[in-house]
Length: 521
Length: 114
Image 1: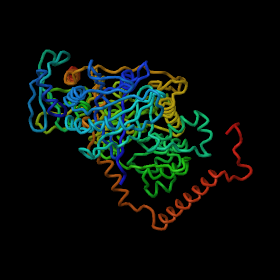
Image 2 (image 1 turned 90 degrees about the horizontal axis):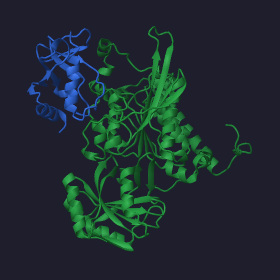
Image 3 (image 1 turned 180 degrees about the vertical axis):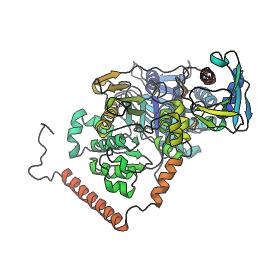
Image 4 (image 1 turned 120 degrees about the vertical axis):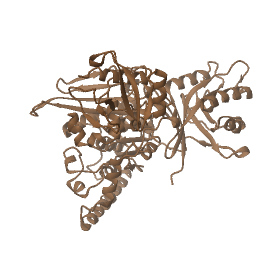
């Protein structure tokens, strides 16, 4: 069983407000309280900061270090309790760099308030430290034991979601991986420090179709350590013109798309010890949502409205940014030619319009999708709809590229510029446009920022997902001999690749494979 | 308040006088355009589509049989003399009050009746 972990997330705006209070011009420590809501995933609990409760005169003293009064804690705890929030105690280490360990006085101060805060708010105290030297954060949840035995779970990371996703890492719990020899070119794009921060980010790819499969493979090839792929669907013959890397045998065997993803990702992975997970739920199921809440960011490669609206929700309620996009191909009415193709990509996060405000989801279709009517031929014929979105391998790569470009901008911020906003490419005129979408005044998604576990439940039973899983469990479309041979082949391939990787990492290369110093690939 | 209770309470506050009959919430909309202009027309939403209100509004608009359209995609209704009409929604979230937004949407649809 995977041990539960903890983290903290906040918007860049809240981070700036908090930083303004604890970062002093005179270089002394300072201290401040804040409120949070919990966001509980399958294996991780995140404290979502919701507001900063600044001290009033007399509630806080600065004397090299900083201290607060019990009255301040009580006042802030009441504010938190009235909202159903928990309490955060944040102080600064002005010259600190990186993840801060707790000094004896720091530990004693938080320990002294931990039980009281939990009594008053019903939620564990969260302690945070701001490192003035490099503007990073560290955090812990005081969620273990009670009374004198209360102790903290140290967080794996602290995330600030703004134009870029800034993550401070607890290097003890999530050690920076050494770059492998296969990652040399990737590391050279942005430097070892950025690479180390990037590859530790937990990423979920929702949808292992033509776009998602490509995205997942490239994340693995870049060296991402912790990638989860979610899809309940099965490889069918009709997928083979777009599912690059899937084989006729996969279709014959009725393999899950995530099985194909696993095979190709493990083959492409350059991390020494990747931790890939594969999940055959829908994001519309509670199990799928739970997995999504464990992630630092999500790449949405699905076109179904229900799945996209669940992702749309958690981008705001749980501060899990979602990179989303899609393609629309227009054909002439007589079916004899392509009129145009359009692909779009955008990051869903507080500060950017949601999918509904962005006109990327027809909200009325969500209810149809939940009812299963988007797969009902009778309904589709009666509504005069097309049975499914067109796509082609020649262009799905462009969608994947657009999503990955958003990914790089949002995570690496080339030139200091983060996510560019919604982008649209028109194939007929070869025009790339920055789209200006604005939040609608009544948007219920964006209004629910950082509510966490009290979010409205959009999940439910998913008959299509259940049917796919049941069919795979009961089907034996290939003979026993074929199944055994396929498993043996996979086992051998993995062993060969592992041995090759070890050899490359040892630098034990044949004379003509020393990599060179540049030039064309 | 969310879900069916939130929908019904919102309609009450709005003054649409909702009643729950079986699996449907029936309320009235004052129509300003088209064949029923100036009239108060009954309409309904099915409870099954309200579980995720207001984040996910209903797709089907239920109307009495006498409200007809030149083109429409329908489904039967458990209430005799009613039909469900399939309709897309444009601009959801434009109104800060989702109930007002839904009533405006239904009003617009009825305004197209022939």
